[in-house]
Length: 308
Image 1 (tube, rainbow, N blue to C red):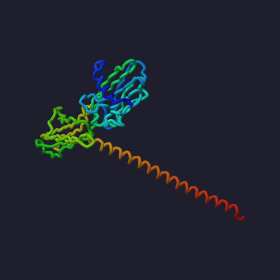
Image 2 (image 1 turned 90 degrees about the horizontal axis):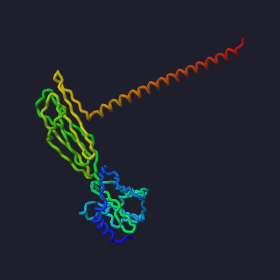
Image 3 (image 1 turned 90 degrees about the vertical axis):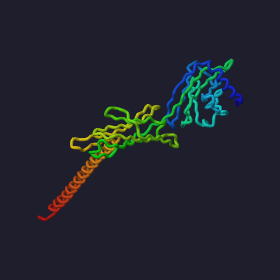
Image 4 (image 1 turned 120 degrees about the vertical axis):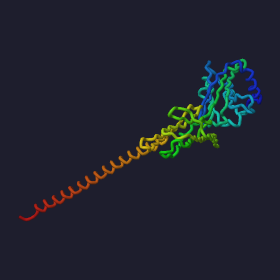
């Protein structure tokens, strides 16, 4: 068992910090996934019994900063923060080759921090041979936005109409854009609500009020900067020459695909019924031919046995 003075050793690392240039890596992980915090030493061959590996939170103000510790080839949990208990693993098959990366299980918003990996080697004296800094950023994809447009009459041009757009289950808070696709200008939302959920994700609801025109093309866009995702839904309404209007929602394309699939299935079922009917008629005809052959054979036998 290592002495409790191991906490003092962590303090000593701050003094030795300038000795090694610090690498910094940004890792993006989705909520609930496992994240690998990279720490690779590309030097000569190492012996675990001479090594001490410390993973800690880089923020000096943290009351508890120990994420994981490896001392002389053994995990040491004596000062590990409760938050990380049973949630951290090193890659044992790569340690002697300089891979000190840490696997952090089931990440949540509270894990969104900057971490530091410090590797010390003890020969004649203990020295820092490698340091790395990892910034863990978390994200979750938003659902495909649903855009609801107004129900318009043919003579509603010039009246104020309202659109609504909603999406959910994403992280972090999104950017929401309303765009007039006729000239690609941005429109200010009338209302914007970002609703937090117990699992740490968000839902977003926004409305837009505009003056109706004869050619309306409105887009609602939900942007997740961390994942570089931009999901959009579109509304289009054009006035025809006879005064009637046509509307289309791109976010309803799935219904069209569903109708096509239903049509294909109906055709397959029809073909199956036709094949089944053909087989039944063929078997019935074969049965009648067989019965006729049996009767003919019996009549022939009767003719041979009758007296002359």
